[in-house]
Image 1 (cartoon, helix red, strand yellow):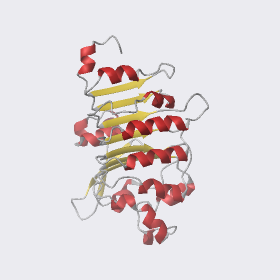
Image 2 (cartoon, rainbow, N blue to C red):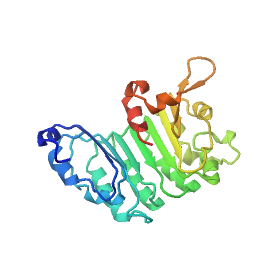
Image 3 (cartoon, rainbow, N blue to C red):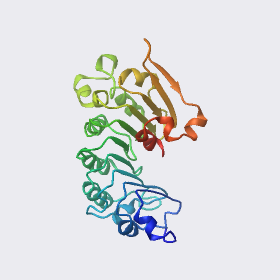
Image 4 (cartoon, rainbow, N blue to C red):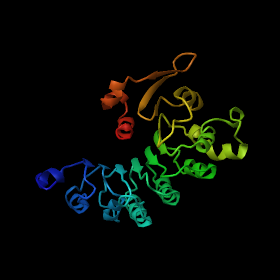
Length: 276
């Protein structure tokens, strides 16, 4: 990074780093000192979760509105430590103006994921959220806790989960009233119907860690009446509600692979879908 003139960094408002070597750490101190007006920061690729320890605890980027972090475990064969998430928590809480947030820690435990949800919930301007729920499938109670902490102001949402048969049963009542779900109860529905109650949700993107997803775009378009676009894994469908019957139109593979921001019509949707 240092071969680029300093004055270029001083004027940066968007910085994306895709690291291909986990043993080559990102120089966060350099970014903090030379990118004072940064509004959008993404760090993806081969990045260890210990990267979070290098994040400043104070409000270093007062204009920061978009943050994307995709990190693996602490080292080969090991999971991230709680201290990593404590450091990330301080950073998020020091940047309360965030309106777009994407957090991917696939090796995290539920207790670590849970701590991040508490930070997400307090962001007053958050409109776009991407979230990975960690290394294990969620129980019914855990899934209920997850959706209860997703702010109702969200307009674009990405969820990546370890889907199991049990999780699939729970998710069937995530968006659908209990009379349509044999496994649902009124108490479960009251906990987990948060997505259908979100007044601004227009784009929903769901990924599975291993198994096939337990629902179709047609089901989601009917259950979530405000959706305009849905994504399952790396497939996308536009939802047409102009006629008497809801129709879904799948994007061709070339369009998904080489999409531009204009294809989405909303820069927030394109930002959220950019990385799996």
